[in-house]
Image 1: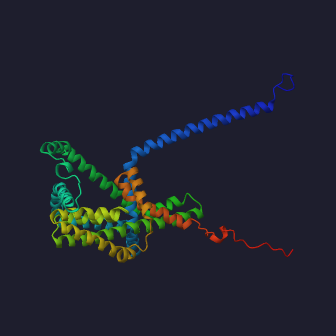
Image 2: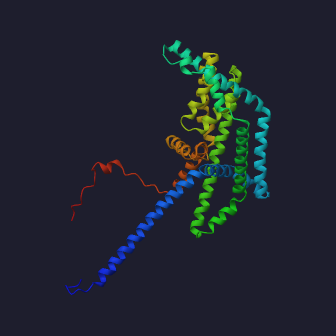
Image 3: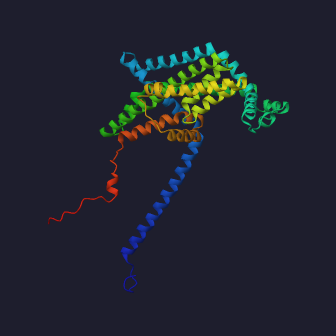
Amino acid sequence: MDGGTGERDPAADARRRASLRWLRTAILYVLLAVAAYQLSGWLFHNLRNFLGLLFLAWLASVTIEPVVDRLERLGLRRGAGTGIVLFSLILLAIGFLAVFGALLAEQLAQLLTALPDAVSRVTEWANRTFDTNFATGDDLVKLTPETVKDLAQRYTPTVLGLVSTLVGVVFQALTMLLFVFYMSAQGPQLRATISRWFPARQQRVITTVWAISVEKAGGYVVSRLILAAASAVATGIFLLVIGVPYWLPLAIWTGVVSQFIPTLGTYLAIALPAIIAAAQQPMDGVWVVAFGTAYQQVENYLLHPRITSRTVSIHPAVAFGSVIVGAALFGAIGALVSVPVVAVIQALVETYGRRYELVGEEGASGDEPAPDDSG
């Protein structure tokens, strides 16, 4: 109303209509945001395994990319070079299984059977030696013929279940190999396709990010594989020399766990061989722990600096936390790829981030220059 004349104020009506339009737009955006959140959560929950497999394929592709690049510079087509690298890795795995497969399967089965008794023996020895009161025997591992039979019936797969599991594993392996091949063979084309959607400055950023990913993530995986192989070989030889049973699966366990589980991996890796050795002869367990400690020093001061000189150094707490987050999101695959992903992110932050000089302590203590009284 305007001055009691009964006429409507056009400006007020316009503001009211604008407020209503803004409210409707805000409600629409909120509903769309909620729908997008629900849809993304549903997609992530249902595609989590596929996304983890995709991450693992990406990690494998950037790991072999330096070798593929070298073959390409030698004049080989990129697709052929990728095929040769993957075929060589498959042949290497088949050769290892052909040489050690039967022994590994036999020792692994015996190890799983003997592990509860070994833990009981070590616990009883600790109670006698150190006057402790840890649970042993039936209190430690309550296994009776009835429980064993029940567990066997519950967890032993049927023929159909075994076949379906085998088919699923083979399908996932072939799927990952397919993604690895195309991610590596078509890497430059993929980078060019993505870069064409951005201006020149962003294209240089994409190139830098790609190069850092290949160098840091691929270098991290290669260095860890080399260190794991060295640790497994050294541990296997030592266990074989002192007569510890099941030396092959224990050596592989030590190499993989010590390198791919941050912080706690070193202790978990040597604990299992020490328990098995101590169950046979308590002094052998001491020797295994001593060997693990000595080898860790050799690795830290001699092998690790040389092999990982081109990879990024990650704080142990950050690495351990990334493994926990990756395992929670993607399971075992997430735990495997989490540390390389964090390595890439850290390298990108160091590349594009800006550091400032720390303020000196004297500036905070009130030691300021005296004012100039000349004027």
